[in-house]
Length: 133
Image (cartoon, rainbow, N blue to C red; front, side, top):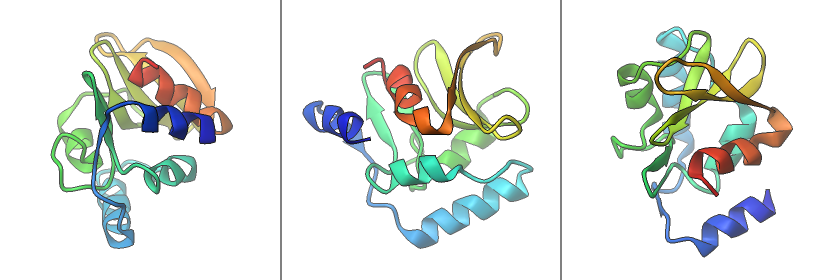
């Protein structure tokens, strides 16, 4: 993860406020009540460094009050494939976590075709892909 975090530090990237434990707990409960699974631990580990990001038309969501970055709002408002939680997007793709497969997936925003799949230990590659690094 250090290479990915170092790359983020080099860029001028807007990020959400510091992750608060209470906000994460609330987000997990609300997402679960929406019929979604919980945010994966590997993504929570990322949120501890950057609680959501905005960069050049790309977004990674967090447990934040910023509507553009709020994982709850975005999962309520945006269309996404079944059995997934939406974690981010760019102009062309969505970043989802498929909780049945326990994998990150980059999917086409239009037809939800899976373009790339990443194991949990490959999270940084999935995040880099959606940020176009």
